[in-house]
Image (cartoon, rainbow, N blue to C red; front, side, top):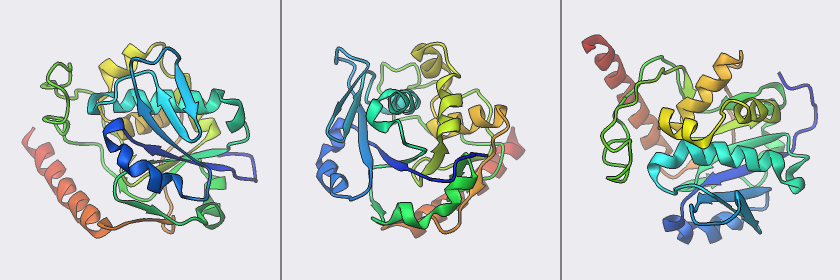
Length: 234
């Protein structure tokens, strides 16, 4: 568990350039935030321009784990984020966050890995990414063959302490290692942390709302049923 008592949260919106029409709304929040996306053609490992963090990597679905990994490395390296104690990773779409979020989630001081929508099982859909990746991607028709452990849904968001971020940063020797072994960023995070004795902790009153949150919860319930059926048929 984190030893620090003071929290300094950075909200990190996972986005892509095709969703840049969402950036103005996200930038209007009063709390500390960045919007991060990928661009393989930049000359630096990352570029921070105001609150837009551009990472040197692909910007398509198959690069989501790489984008998360590079975002974490950048936040740990950028001097202006040196006092950040936690990050909240969340998707850019259909998201509404209370401007007072940092005052209302005091529980994050107690945990390294917490969130609100937990997939509490050890099975998952190994082809969920099909039809989401570019045709020239290795993941276009390649099933995920790795492990599943209980993980927080990436779209619903999860919070990582600086300790957890440092563990994740030190997990890989190269970007290729991330790309070739992981397609689900949220599962990747859970796997790394579990290996280091860090387990997900649900925060019931995290102040994050979705216009279609009920639909998301219903979708997750239906997916859990599919997971159970899938496991029986294997």
